[in-house]
Length: 328
Image 1 (tube, one colour):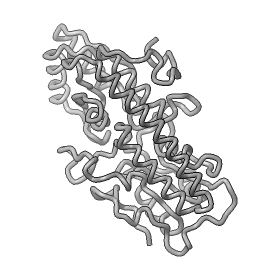
Image 2 (cartoon, rainbow, N blue to C red; image 1 turned 90 degrees about the horizontal axis):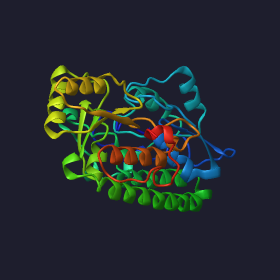
Image 3 (spheres, helix red, strand yellow; image 1 turned 180 degrees about the horizontal axis):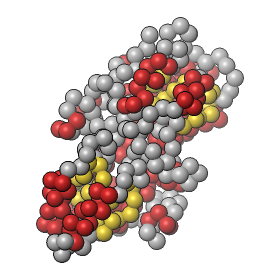
Image 4 (cartoon, helix red, strand yellow; image 1 turned 135 degrees about the vertical axis):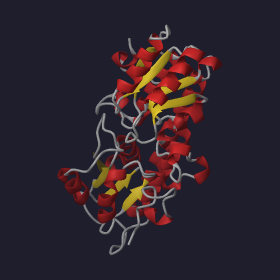
């Protein structure tokens, strides 16, 4: 039996996560396209790029959905059961779906895309002791390793198109490398004293590590944790002391805590703006550029850079950002 609990109840998924389930030969023998299920948009996007025409991807959680709190519906369970192969992020991101994924893994292959990331690249914050921070996609360079994990899984499951999967993965990784370079260059133009990113919850630690930002969240890693008044007051002190010009709301987290920071700063005669909405645990609306992984990170990089006083391309790396999304 394949165990997929790694990344859900422990700091490191076992190698068996990337093996096929018992009772089959582990290779696809049905009709194309392969019915592929992905939990979150960031995972679905990798599978779509690597699988191309050979796969049909069904995404369980859409725009604005908080994966930490999401519980699978009957329709979700049915979709997963109807699928040929399932991909999830892992590292406890889809905590409330673990039981469903474990049950499904007894009859079909289930893969954690974070499986191949080296432990040394994963963060283990103090308030998440014993577990890794699951928001790896915020560091484009590290998330790129998940592309290889998907290519490996699809190649094992469908050897007939292994060459196609590997080729598509290589092309996609080149695109992500360009995006990562854009992040380094753009955020590098922010004055050093202004490189403080204050957001709703600690989803941006990898982003901060990758691009040189001091990241501060009102809530902890999981949105299940409650922000306390003391933490709000601490961040108001930081805003006032460093004269921080912008704080940020997130698409999948309520705005109230960030609005409390703005009010607190104003009560101390310090003006701070909400620097538009960032995508954290979910991508943008389906069918938009921001509804892709490239667009999601392009948006975040561009918004953060400009709001904190740096220089970034007006409509992002590819010139595709929606003007209304960046306050224009």
